[in-house]
Length: 341
Image (cartoon, rainbow, N blue to C red; front, side):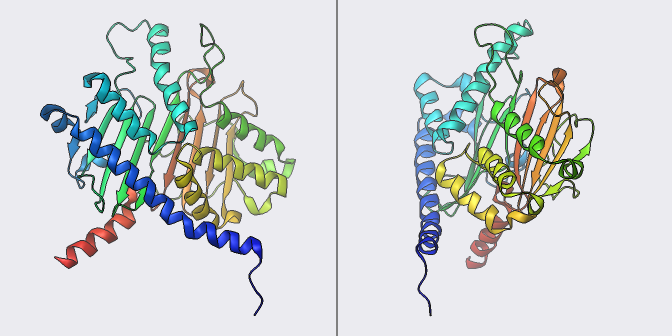
């Protein structure tokens, strides 16, 4: 029997390490959550905590509205620092920078809209917990406010799920003032445009399913999503350079999360079949036009939309058909736990 080659051994080593690395993230997340919760007073704790099975866990949104949980506005400076430390256990440096940029846009909107009622407020971002964080516990947490929704589910103290996840940017590009030129989601827009413009005429006809951009991401804030109707160009019909562009775009979205989590998720996506991933486009082919695209594989969906405010207001979302809120794995664990009682 031939011996495994070095690349095969390296791949096996990587796959062997992945669960351990995700487990380490879960442990860090659990400790940071406990530290934050222990720093709250009784009133704050009551606002922050819900049972794991409460319907609120799936009540996620990305528009400016009153939310459940404890807002940063009601936290001390030290408590806010602990809350941000928790967020760092889930996000990469890239993800943290995007989140900070989106939160800071509330001040840009406050000025643009002449807001005097406190609707645009960078401290109106909430932390909400579901269940009790523990070394082997099932629990979840959410960081959410206008144009940000990060939903994490930890199962058995080992497995971390991070969908649904939403980042939006209004404006998509700051066009005046000291922050002029900032584009928090510029890479997501630019790499999508680069890919669609790299297609040949036949490929583009297959990829483009509508001449006008969609007005919003299709899945909005649905609690659960199924695969969308087939549309677009399969990765199997891309040349090697185009295929790498597509995978780089997928990795761009995954790179919002800790490298340990992103690497594990990309391995799952690849194992499900890269050739079965489709790239679908609607709208114009340059930044002056409204655009929409989606990338859909057997296990996941990415959507990008820049339609509102004359194509200067973008939304992005990452969903998993079985992994949103850790649904399937959590159900298995809860059933197993119940059977043991």
